[in-house]
Image 1 (cartoon, rainbow, N blue to C red):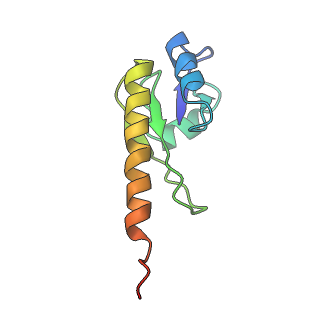
Image 2: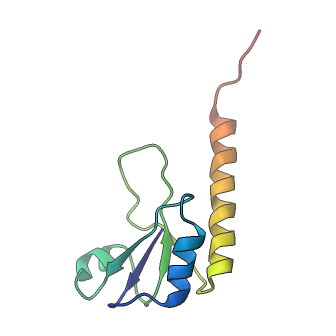
Length: 99
C-alpha cells in the first residue's frame, strides 16, 4: 500500500498505516519531489491510496489498485478483503493431492 502526498500525510493515513502494520507494507511518496513516479502510477489527486499485491513475482504492476476512500477503517476493510481474496486464489491454484 502506498499513498502519494505533498509533504505531510493526512493523520487518517498515518492511522491506517498503524492499523495495517504487520499485515501490509505501507509507504508514502512525495509527488512534488517524485513527479515521474506518481505520474507513471496514474496519480491525479492527493492523497491517494493504492494497493499493490505481492504475487510472488519480481515484476511489479505500476498501476496498483486505487482505493477510493480516505477513511482509515474503510480502507483497512477493503485491504483485508483483497488479502483474503488473494489467499483464496492462492489456495485454489495449488495442485491437489491425489491417491
